[in-house]
Length: 369
Image (cartoon, rainbow, N blue to C red; front, side):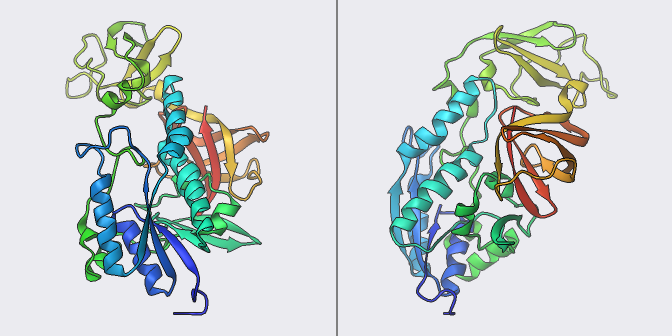
């Protein structure tokens, strides 16, 4: 035990996965007083078919026993429903595509969870996110993780100074392969457990069918954006997102452009007319309608509090699995900003987040409108 950690409590959010398990293991080894916390945030259809919360809790308790820490189980289902899921549905109903992981982090993991941890005497909270935090110039910066293939700073851009000041990311400098190795060497049975996917705290499931339970179908036309040709029928524009290729059921429509091998090029969602309930599509991945060299963002959240300098060159992502794209922030008025890219970006989607970086430092971002 070292002087920094002696007697200090850190509450670790345990999900039952390998990342949070190793985060807790590392903190325990460093001499922290570690308490695990398992959050149950979804109850609507908590069945074995889709939700794994029961098995996840079993895994959490097994890991805690192996590490030698106590675990508290909490239910934040009401807070999750009000602060994340209701907003999620509102955005889809408005024709946008929200990012529940961003909301989940800012509203639950680093808000409700943080508040609870502080109430029970924690000095810090910790999670298994691949990201980093450091003190700089009297404040705190959010950093990309060492493992660029797993970096999750994109989902954390709405964290503020107070939240970062109380947060530890033990996996900041580790690669996923090493995390699994550490878990195996410590005898943790989750070492090879598959990473969780799907909606934050809800899990992986047939997404359209899930949305249809909350947003009733409203059939309408699928038309070609270029010439208004009627191509098919959709069950509701809310179930589709810009750039979507699968699930349109209009493959093989005659009269479209042909690719080099003679097959018709794929169709992609390129627009929505909510008033007329029309879903517009275009043919070809690189169709001009799918490319944009600028965007406007609102609901801005800058980690240091101040907006970045205008006309400085930064990089930004408009989706998680995207390479950093050089850009300039052309206009910032406190409520919205205009971001111009050096090269056109593909399928910039309203409701998703644009996240701005300066080298490894995440500056913040906003919601694309």
